[in-house]
Length: 123
Image (cartoon, rainbow, N blue to C red; front, side, top):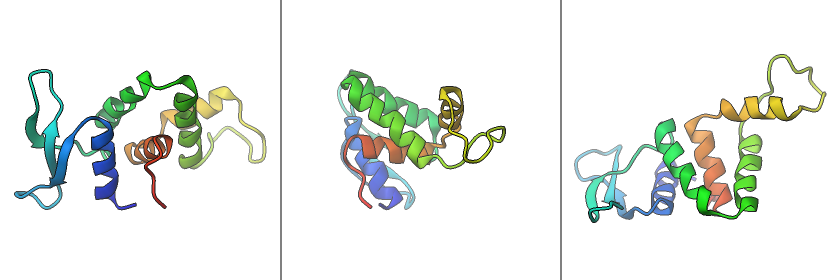
């Protein structure tokens, strides 16, 4: 999945509409942002490089059933490589060690896990 396609899918999952490449900047997307005062035309967050933007996207999972939120956790484990340095290879991790791995997930890894969770990831 291209980075642009990932950003569009996440934005739409967050309620953005008419998301498209910017007419002014080749590396940005723009669209209508959902707002309490009506929609406003603005730049879409860079979900793949901004942990704060991904945190806002992750909040949309709060209203989902617990099994879907649990899937997000599982996908984060899947897409975040490596184990804690203190864990010997081959030894199964405990919950603290899995949490350590997830806490270190990058915005791009969180974006992939998010898209897999909502069924929008394309290999």
